[in-house]
Image (tube, rainbow, N blue to C red; front, top):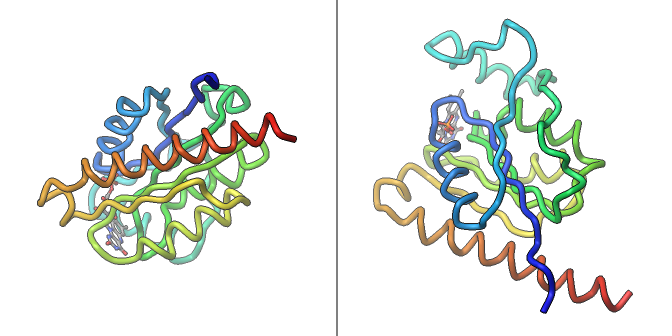
Length: 175
Ligand SMILES: Cc1cc2nc3c(=O)[nH]c(=O)nc-3n(C[C@H](O)[C@H](O)[C@H](O)COP(=O)(O)O)c2cc1C
């Protein structure tokens, strides 16, 4: 039997939804967890001003600055990265984090939370920033949360990550 694969869940969350999904995922996967933190004092994203700032950051693809992770990424088989969708794009801090850390990430899985529109371009943008094809992707909408079908989606996502990692583990032995 192969050794259990180590997973780290990393997320950016402005208003708590992505954080909640990240926490549930981490607990279901037996994974460690860490929030993406922005650098500098001018990073408030709350309230109407913060909303507009976030919208403009996404629309203009502004390069924001984020802090280095606390966990050592090289110790993990896979990093699961979560973001809210902003203007049909990934949040600026999540994109910045992926770009900065891409060389240290072995395998990546991606998820987003959103009102309802724009998951595909946001997840594609994240994959591009990570520089690799994701093991699995998952989008959780406000409708999913209202209908309480987020758990089924999360579990399918987690199973796919585990399955893909197990398969990669087998090929590690072959090569
Ligand atoms: C600036 C901004 C832009 C948004 N743009 C979209 C969008 O294009 N499509 C969508 O479905 N939801 C959009 N949303 C809603 C968020 O994606 C959604 O509420 C998400 O779950 C929030 O996650 P969080 O609580 O972790 O920040 C937007 C929210 C913000 C703040």
